[in-house]
Length: 533
Image (cartoon, rainbow, N blue to C red; front, top):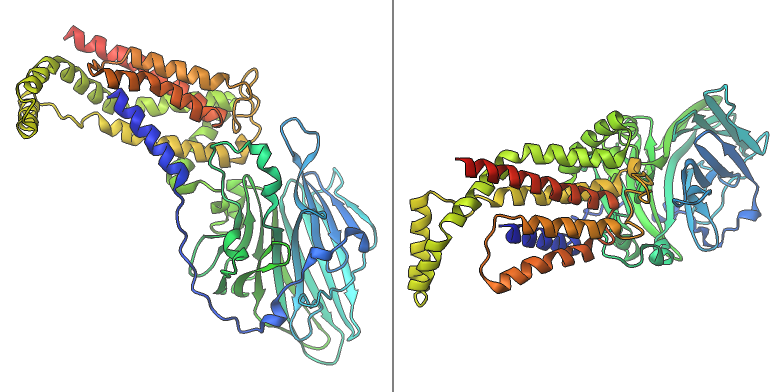
């Protein structure tokens, strides 16, 4: 049964690594506004030095806002490092000749400032070049403004709060003209699709299943939907008519998202591509009218930061689903909640993983006990099975009938030991996705040389220990395998697993080592209990 268990787990892992779920295609809806009007700018020729940027520093964010359009063109996360041993902060939004990732917003329509199609943007003004959140303050307001020739004052106010990754961005438009004006809000995220091409060596082209990187959105029709960069690049564009929702760009551990503050303000969500593999996702608001000598406030929220489940869930419905827990999200999510609770008790994520393994094995112990009792019974009747095989070696049908009759007589279910194996498969993959997608485990140390449980063991010691623990588990197993080929396959299995686990997250390997050690103890207890009877 151990051989069957290992075979099924290995088969499940391999199949899961090479099968990807096909995403349902959205029905395209033709937008009411002309394409020429909404097709956003191409920043492929943008040079950072062409226009002045202002800098904004808070306790968690360091930003640059381009005064041409008032877009956020750079964002560093102060509390997260670029790499494990790096002193440099992780950069999410970025502008360089090789890579661009911007959070853009503007006002389009009849009296809008921004013509994204022709790349005409207003040049805003600000009182200072550097805005910094003081230690004794909880809020920082960064106002910029532009006065149009039509005598309309546009104020764009960025509101940062201490310890927060969500930024309020308010447009306050004062219509000093004598005519009623008409505008629409456009919020957009834009990024190079091919950035990971330059980082292939970072992953060493290993067998790890990489998490989703692309766009996502929420609409009236879909609470949450991912839309791949590949689809946008191949002109499989998305256009969804909706009055509610949000848009996002997601990657492992981090995301950006535009969320409207007003209800029912969105007109539609859409995607498109620009030159040089720039992909875009945006939403446009319904038409907004402002009477003469009056003003209107339009508010949005921009999330720039780590994918922290609790905070994202409070910010917008279903925004926490941007954390890519894959097919087994219904397992990964409760596992993470339990893991986080254990971490609060012991203060070490590695020890928490060992404890969660123990809890899982204890919960599954009744099924494991049934499994091993079935194996003990199978062991006792093995001589009878050998006699039947010898007697009916030339009649396979009769052989199967006689063996099944023996099982019925001895009250043995030959499949009785499979349920624990089947339950272990989704738990294994659920834990995998949790370890590779939860920001809390990024760069989380365990002991000694294991300084990042979300990454592979740099010295490959844990995978080797895992192989040894698997070999010992098989040696102490209750199986009596007489077939020489099966014996060879069983003893060769740990080497195959070591190869696959070389690049698995250390936390996952630690889980499997703990699982094997607890399995050996349970085997011993159940065997001793059965022999006493």
